[in-house]
Image (tube, rainbow, N blue to C red):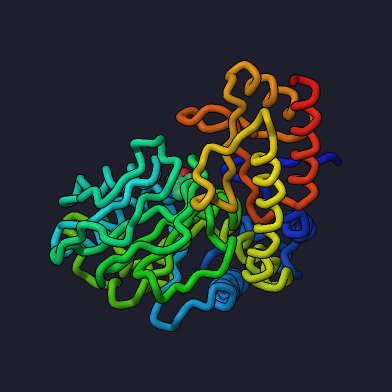
Length: 360
Ligand SMILES: *Cc1c(COP(=O)(O)O)cnc(C)c1O
């Protein structure tokens, strides 16, 4: 067996230990005589899997008791609609536009009410986080929305915006469990799990209890009402059973690493190796303002499209895969989520150095 270093933005690498455990349990999950894939979501054994996953997540993230944890389907993209459907009582909300995912959420919200652009970094291809200390937030806004880590552009909010007392909704898809966060500062944090938490198929939403009410916008489908999901402990209908099971294993893996403080330290170490090289290289350079750099997604370019393409091709052949940048940025992007081992980043940098020498 030979495994590549996979720098994909998502779905992305999972910890080898988690994959090995899942493989060992594939035919017979803990004496049940079945794979988790084959199991009723109403069975006792599955109930324990989902309950334990939630309990472990609550422990790792230190989630306060007045927040619900929901395991949902439809991807982060469907959640873009769920936010206004469940939260737009005044039919008005503010959005900070820091990239494509924030923009898509903003455009989706416009279907349901007045979505106001509070700030944007579109003027410089989303290569920075705009100043959010004094946003034009008005009293009638139901919430303020951000995309905390911008997967495509490689920026991250290092401080949360001043929401002037309004509820903060944050898409943390690509920084989920990459470092500790203070859940109590948010009304809602959510993310698709396929970036840093598990296989595709689930969204985890952490929602302050008072926001879970019957008062959704008229026409909100039953499935998309948070109340439906909360009242049924995410088991209103068949959940993405296998995905949740793997997420649960990742939570235990994080606990074994020493929790999110330890995960963060490791992520900082990995990111530093790559950013330090980008800062000293004469061929490669990062595309993001230093103070806004993401620990998870690192876009970089040579400034020459042909050279970029040559690099991606040779890197792929050498076992560093999915390094091609997003079509809107070009160049390269290395996504170095929790499961990317430090050797993956060290070896990538070695490879980049060699490429630079050979092509100088
Ligand atoms: C990938 C991603 C999305 C979209 O996720 P889907 O689950 O494919 O809908 C949304 N927001 C961010 C920040 C992402 O990285």
